[in-house]
Length: 324
Image 1 (cartoon, one colour):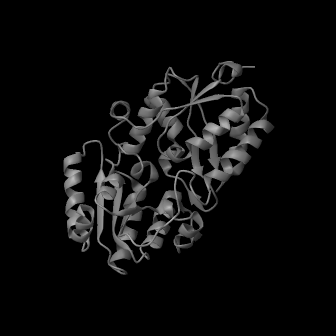
Image 2: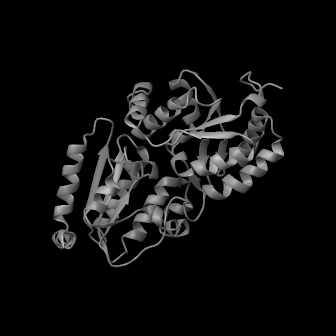
Image 3: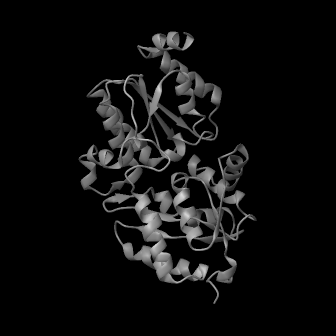
């Protein structure tokens, strides 16, 4: 039996997994999923300048920086895998949407790479039509030469629980009171990617601050703090940042907040304004918003960080403690 790409299912054994966007946090889920089906999964690794430059060349100018990086990750897997896996994320749970670019990501990358390789996808939509997910899993089973039940069972037991897990397997929710805290807000594939974020978290930690993010807060707590948006169909990552910021702003040790955003991100343009408005009308926490794209320079980035830290009331005491 042949797939609709014309390739023998038995030949599709090495699956390429680009480590960008939503897969940045979930690569282990998908890797375990495919390995449970008898496939070998190859991940693209950390974002490098070569990967970033490749994505910039392949994408149109209007594409946001994380999508360009993801495209570069996908391109780096060409020739290393039999096919590249790109899930089509519409929603991971009811009453929540994914970024619109996630919905069309398989098509966008396929066009950018000019169909240089084969692609596999799963349509994840638990908000409007979960049947689409089941149908796409059955199509994937045909591509891999596995039974639909085997693929569905693997998805239900491995991937589905992790998509809306209380705690990310890559993050810690532990919090030790005492040290001054700086909250870093932004999409996980932005703030935790050392290249895209220009090592923002590391620089703040080197300055003597304890860094916390929305993803250090349990998912149920993040959702508890997003009223009134939870009752509507809202963006998942937006809810993470809104609820996480509200939980973090109540920490007595919080010294300031930094919001790292990608230029042309529609979700950030809305969420950032809501968070800043709440801070201005509540506990007045020093707030820095930084917008970056592929033209942003690290020297200017560092200057803004240093200027922000200098305005914090406890900066001098922290520096003295570090010297001692």
